[in-house]
Image (cartoon, rainbow, N blue to C red):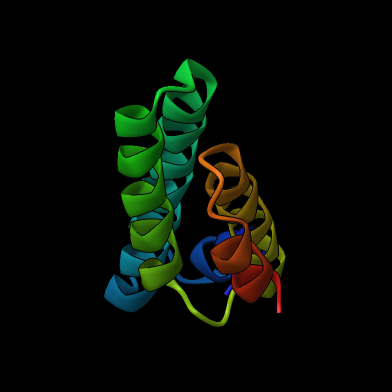
Length: 94
């Protein structure tokens, strides 16, 4: 579920534990994506490797959140490309 839908659900049912859990997961995934982006900017192979792990964690939070996941997959492919793992990058985009 996307942020917009979760916010709407929480507005109508603020005490719903399931909606609260989804919201926390979305926030965690956003934070991980930001951390991965910072590691990507460092550019060295170790940082990019850590970055890839964080992107995988992002994708695990909500596999059905296509708008978010598309961005993460693209970022992951860019990170793979940065360390010359081009075949893997293409597979991520496929």
